[in-house]
Image 1 (spheres, rainbow, N blue to C red):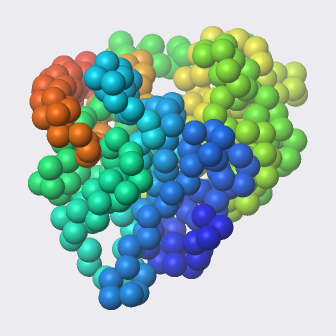
Image 2: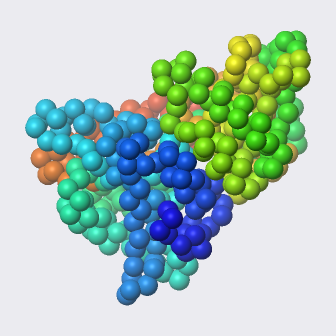
Image 3: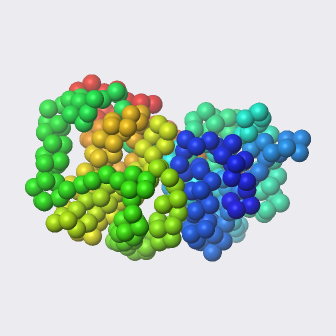
Length: 372
C-alpha cells in the first residue's frame, strides 16, 4: 500500500467502507499482519486504460488458506493428490475480514467491464504461476458478472441485523414473540445482576490503555479457541486502530471499576461491523450483551441501517439476526480441475440456499420479514 497513492485509492473506493480505506490496509501491512512471512504477500492490482489509472483491487499472494472465511482446504488436498501445487494462489479480499464490499474500485470517469478484468487477471495468473484467483465477499451484482466470465460462484450464510426504523431497543423487541422477548430480557437483566457495567467508546475516546487491554483480550480468546494468538499483532491495535479516525467503536465491560471484557466494531456509512471480542473472566450472557445487543443499540441511536456482526453463529437467529447470503468467485487455472470446482460450487450453493430458507423460519419475530 505504501507504493499506492492514497488519494487515488480513496478516489477508487471512497470513504464509506472502513476496511477498504488506505489507512486500514496499509496498517495491516505496517503492523506485520499482511507480509510475505505471514502468507499474505501484498500484490495489489492496478488497472490502467490508455495509460491512465482506472481502478484498483486489494489483492494478495497466499501460501495458505487461513484468514479467508471461504474454505478451500479440500481443493488444496485435491491438487496435492494430483501432484499439483495449490499454493501460491491469488486472492482479492480484505484480510481476516468476512465483510461484503467492493473488490474493484474504479476512478470516477472510468467504466471497466468485468470480462476485460477477468481476462487480464487470467493472464496474470499464468505469468505468476499461481493455481487460482479468488474474489471473496463481493456484492451480488459483481459476483453475477464474474459468473458470466467463467468464474464459478460460491455462497455462504451470515446473520445480519436490519434497522426497520426502530425508535429504541424496546421497539425492536416488540417485534418478538412473547416467549423470545422474555428470554432476551432475562439475558440483559443478568448483566446488572453480576455487577457488570458497560460503556461504549468511539474514535479518540478509546485510549492507548483501552487498546492494550483489548489486545490482551483478543489474544486470550484466540488462544482458548484455536491455540494461537490470533492473526492481528499488538501494533495493529495500538498503532493502526488509533489512526482510523472515528471508525473504531469499542464496548468495554467493567466490574468493580476494572475492565473484564471488550468488543470491537468498525462503523461505515450505513453499516456497523462487529469484528472482535475477548474477556479475562467468564460471565453469563456477557458475550451477547457486548457483541450483539450493544451493537443493535448503537445502530438505532446512530441511524445505521445494518449491523454485520461477523461470520457464523446460528445463536444470532433467535436474537433477531436474519440469514443473508454472501458471495465469492473463483478462477481455476488448471482445466482438469476447473469443471470439478464448478460442479462442486453449484451443488454447494443449492444446499446453502436451502439452509438460508430453513434458518429464516427460525427467526423470533411475530411476522418474519427476512432479507434475501
